[in-house]
Image 1: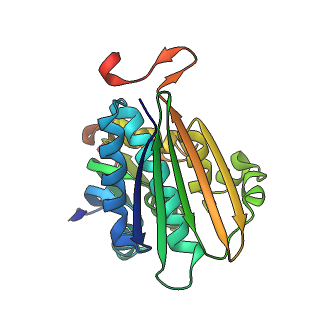
Image 2 (image 1 turned 120 degrees about the vertical axis):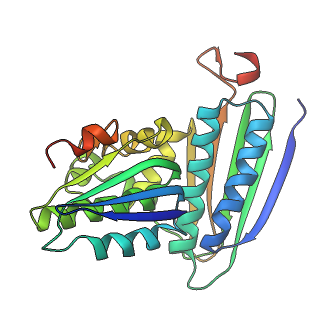
Length: 149
Length: 110
């Protein structure tokens, strides 16, 4: 497969989340991910976009979503020009203890890490915040694509 | 997302269906806050028809659990699809909630 690219630029409002999920799940299905992996990709993207809607901007702006496909993986890049954040503050929390106290702030970021094979955050507050997430078609030598399982 | 409420003498049942996400979870939250009172402090949530739930849905149910605990009541979730169960497990909250396989088990002892 040559590298293919799909892009969605969409206003940052909660009623667009379903549309974003549909866009992502259709492409994930099309390239042959299992239903389980399609759900995981959909949820990871939803969480990242929900974070942009909740925290990045004071008013409705734009979310930029890019999906890149090559022969071995699907890469999703979600970016915004909002206020940014320090992801290490969230990731350094003792999540087990934190959740035991029934605190759920930052849960979305932990879910993204649990759902995808690779996740990378970059934030330059006010300029660009970007989350890049990857799902491999083959993991640990095992083919994950439903069409080939 | 749609919701339906059935009120019994000692508890309420909230049946949710469709997608529970950042768009719809405020509606669920509002309904839950109106259902859990000092006189009706037990809530059973039927998730059989919930096809999608994100962390805002989970957070809403955590708030419901805190509220029932505060009122010395009970919150039970039941009939979760596998994908929804996974969200609770990945959130490490599956042990925090009382989760039942079906309605019959969830109603036991209520």
